Length: 190
Image 1 (tube, rainbow, N blue to C red):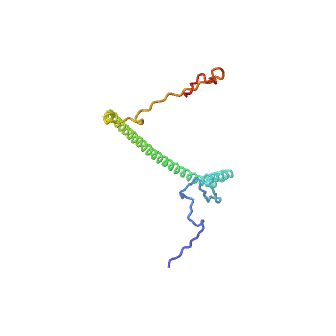
Image 2: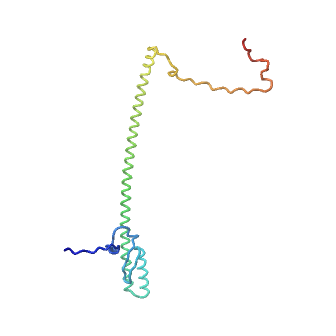
Image 3: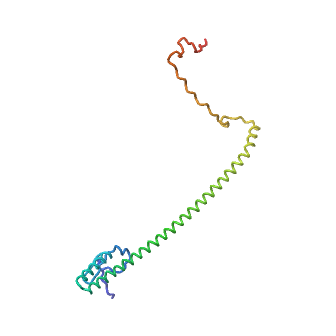
Protein backbone atom coordinates (compact mmCIF):
# COMPACT_ATOMS: atom_id res chain seq x y z
CA UNK A 1 0.00 0.00 0.00
CA UNK A 2 0.95 3.55 -0.67
CA UNK A 3 1.44 5.84 2.27
CA UNK A 4 -1.15 8.57 2.25
CA UNK A 5 -0.17 12.16 2.51
CA UNK A 6 -2.28 14.38 4.62
CA UNK A 7 -3.64 17.41 2.87
CA UNK A 8 -4.39 20.52 4.76
CA UNK A 9 -6.66 23.15 3.32
CA UNK A 10 -5.05 25.90 5.36
CA UNK A 11 -3.35 28.76 3.59
CA UNK A 12 -0.48 28.60 6.04
CA UNK A 13 0.48 25.09 4.88
CA UNK A 14 1.12 26.14 1.29
CA UNK A 15 4.67 26.53 0.11
CA UNK A 16 5.72 30.02 1.04
CA UNK A 17 9.15 31.44 1.16
CA UNK A 18 10.62 34.86 1.61
CA UNK A 19 12.46 34.48 -1.71
CA UNK A 20 11.30 35.68 -5.08
CA UNK A 21 7.87 34.29 -5.80
CA UNK A 22 7.35 36.64 -8.67
CA UNK A 23 4.73 39.29 -8.55
CA UNK A 24 5.27 42.73 -7.16
CA UNK A 25 8.08 42.46 -4.61
CA UNK A 26 8.02 46.19 -3.94
CA UNK A 27 4.53 46.04 -2.37
CA UNK A 28 4.65 42.49 -1.08
CA UNK A 29 4.54 41.92 2.68
CA UNK A 30 7.40 39.84 4.09
CA UNK A 31 7.73 38.02 7.40
CA UNK A 32 11.40 38.31 8.25
CA UNK A 33 12.84 36.23 11.09
CA UNK A 34 15.58 38.43 12.43
CA UNK A 35 17.88 38.03 15.43
CA UNK A 36 15.31 39.50 17.78
CA UNK A 37 12.08 38.04 16.40
CA UNK A 38 9.93 38.57 13.35
CA UNK A 39 9.76 41.77 11.39
CA UNK A 40 6.76 42.11 9.10
CA UNK A 41 6.17 44.57 6.24
CA UNK A 42 7.05 45.59 2.73
CA UNK A 43 10.77 45.55 1.85
CA UNK A 44 11.12 49.27 2.50
CA UNK A 45 9.38 48.92 5.88
CA UNK A 46 11.56 45.91 6.82
CA UNK A 47 14.69 47.82 5.79
CA UNK A 48 13.67 50.80 7.90
CA UNK A 49 12.89 48.56 10.89
CA UNK A 50 16.27 46.76 10.68
CA UNK A 51 18.11 50.08 10.29
CA UNK A 52 16.34 51.36 13.42
CA UNK A 53 17.28 48.17 15.31
CA UNK A 54 20.88 48.59 14.10
CA UNK A 55 20.96 52.20 15.41
CA UNK A 56 19.54 51.04 18.75
CA UNK A 57 22.18 48.28 18.96
CA UNK A 58 24.91 50.78 18.14
CA UNK A 59 23.71 53.10 20.91
CA UNK A 60 23.85 50.21 23.36
CA UNK A 61 27.38 49.34 22.15
CA UNK A 62 26.33 45.89 20.81
CA UNK A 63 28.44 45.69 17.65
CA UNK A 64 27.43 42.07 16.86
CA UNK A 65 23.69 42.81 16.93
CA UNK A 66 24.26 46.01 14.97
CA UNK A 67 26.14 44.12 12.24
CA UNK A 68 23.46 41.43 12.15
CA UNK A 69 20.65 44.00 11.74
CA UNK A 70 22.61 45.81 9.05
CA UNK A 71 23.09 42.53 7.14
CA UNK A 72 19.37 41.82 7.34
CA UNK A 73 18.59 45.34 6.10
CA UNK A 74 21.14 44.91 3.30
CA UNK A 75 19.47 41.64 2.23
CA UNK A 76 16.09 43.34 1.83
CA UNK A 77 17.74 46.34 0.19
CA UNK A 78 19.25 44.01 -2.44
CA UNK A 79 15.89 42.32 -2.97
CA UNK A 80 14.21 45.69 -3.40
CA UNK A 81 16.83 47.03 -5.82
CA UNK A 82 16.72 43.79 -7.85
CA UNK A 83 12.92 43.98 -8.04
CA UNK A 84 13.12 47.61 -9.13
CA UNK A 85 15.70 46.74 -11.81
CA UNK A 86 13.41 43.98 -13.08
CA UNK A 87 10.45 46.36 -13.08
CA UNK A 88 12.51 48.97 -14.95
CA UNK A 89 13.64 46.39 -17.51
CA UNK A 90 10.07 45.18 -17.93
CA UNK A 91 8.81 48.75 -18.35
CA UNK A 92 11.56 49.53 -20.90
CA UNK A 93 10.69 46.36 -22.83
CA UNK A 94 7.01 47.34 -22.79
CA UNK A 95 7.88 50.84 -24.02
CA UNK A 96 10.06 49.38 -26.79
CA UNK A 97 7.20 47.12 -27.89
CA UNK A 98 4.80 50.07 -27.80
CA UNK A 99 7.18 52.13 -29.94
CA UNK A 100 7.48 49.26 -32.45
CA UNK A 101 3.70 48.84 -32.61
CA UNK A 102 3.26 52.60 -33.06
CA UNK A 103 5.88 52.61 -35.84
CA UNK A 104 4.03 49.76 -37.57
CA UNK A 105 0.71 51.61 -37.25
CA UNK A 106 2.31 54.80 -38.59
CA UNK A 107 3.76 52.88 -41.54
CA UNK A 108 0.40 51.27 -42.31
CA UNK A 109 -1.32 54.64 -42.06
CA UNK A 110 1.25 56.18 -44.41
CA UNK A 111 0.75 53.34 -46.90
CA UNK A 112 -3.03 53.73 -46.67
CA UNK A 113 -2.72 57.46 -47.35
CA UNK A 114 -0.48 56.77 -50.35
CA UNK A 115 -2.95 54.19 -51.71
CA UNK A 116 -5.84 56.60 -51.21
CA UNK A 117 -3.92 59.38 -52.94
CA UNK A 118 -3.17 57.05 -55.85
CA UNK A 119 -6.85 56.04 -56.10
CA UNK A 120 -7.84 59.72 -56.03
CA UNK A 121 -5.35 60.54 -58.81
CA UNK A 122 -6.65 57.65 -60.93
CA UNK A 123 -10.26 58.69 -60.34
CA UNK A 124 -9.45 62.30 -61.25
CA UNK A 125 -7.70 61.14 -64.43
CA UNK A 126 -10.70 58.97 -65.38
CA UNK A 127 -13.09 61.86 -64.71
CA UNK A 128 -10.95 64.25 -66.76
CA UNK A 129 -10.77 61.72 -69.59
CA UNK A 130 -14.53 61.14 -69.47
CA UNK A 131 -15.14 64.89 -69.47
CA UNK A 132 -12.82 65.35 -72.46
CA UNK A 133 -14.63 62.57 -74.31
CA UNK A 134 -17.99 64.13 -73.41
CA UNK A 135 -16.85 67.52 -74.72
CA UNK A 136 -15.70 65.96 -77.97
CA UNK A 137 -19.00 64.16 -78.46
CA UNK A 138 -21.22 67.18 -77.57
CA UNK A 139 -20.98 68.96 -80.96
CA UNK A 140 -21.88 65.71 -82.64
CA UNK A 141 -24.88 65.32 -80.34
CA UNK A 142 -26.07 68.88 -81.12
CA UNK A 143 -25.81 68.19 -84.85
CA UNK A 144 -27.68 64.93 -84.50
CA UNK A 145 -30.49 66.67 -82.51
CA UNK A 146 -30.93 69.26 -85.28
CA UNK A 147 -30.94 66.59 -87.92
CA UNK A 148 -33.48 64.45 -86.09
CA UNK A 149 -36.03 67.26 -85.91
CA UNK A 150 -36.46 67.08 -82.17
CA UNK A 151 -38.28 69.89 -80.44
CA UNK A 152 -36.62 71.74 -77.57
CA UNK A 153 -38.45 71.23 -74.31
CA UNK A 154 -38.26 73.52 -71.28
CA UNK A 155 -36.19 70.91 -69.46
CA UNK A 156 -33.53 70.95 -72.17
CA UNK A 157 -33.22 74.73 -72.27
CA UNK A 158 -31.04 76.54 -69.78
CA UNK A 159 -33.07 78.44 -67.23
CA UNK A 160 -32.94 82.22 -67.33
CA UNK A 161 -32.87 84.26 -64.20
CA UNK A 162 -35.80 86.46 -63.43
CA UNK A 163 -35.28 90.08 -62.57
CA UNK A 164 -35.74 90.81 -58.91
CA UNK A 165 -39.07 92.24 -57.87
CA UNK A 166 -39.37 95.95 -57.39
CA UNK A 167 -40.44 97.34 -54.11
CA UNK A 168 -43.89 98.94 -54.22
CA UNK A 169 -43.91 102.71 -54.04
CA UNK A 170 -45.20 104.10 -50.77
CA UNK A 171 -48.67 105.57 -51.05
CA UNK A 172 -49.08 109.17 -50.11
CA UNK A 173 -52.07 109.78 -47.94
CA UNK A 174 -52.48 113.40 -49.07
CA UNK A 175 -53.12 114.70 -52.59
CA UNK A 176 -51.52 111.91 -54.69
CA UNK A 177 -54.26 109.41 -53.89
CA UNK A 178 -56.64 108.80 -56.82
CA UNK A 179 -59.97 110.51 -56.50
CA UNK A 180 -63.24 108.71 -56.03
CA UNK A 181 -64.57 109.75 -59.40
CA UNK A 182 -61.95 107.57 -61.09
CA UNK A 183 -59.58 110.18 -62.44
CA UNK A 184 -56.49 108.09 -63.29
CA UNK A 185 -58.13 104.69 -63.41
CA UNK A 186 -59.36 103.38 -66.77
CA UNK A 187 -63.06 103.00 -67.10
CA UNK A 188 -64.54 99.60 -67.53
CA UNK A 189 -65.75 98.79 -71.03
CA UNK A 190 -69.46 98.57 -71.44
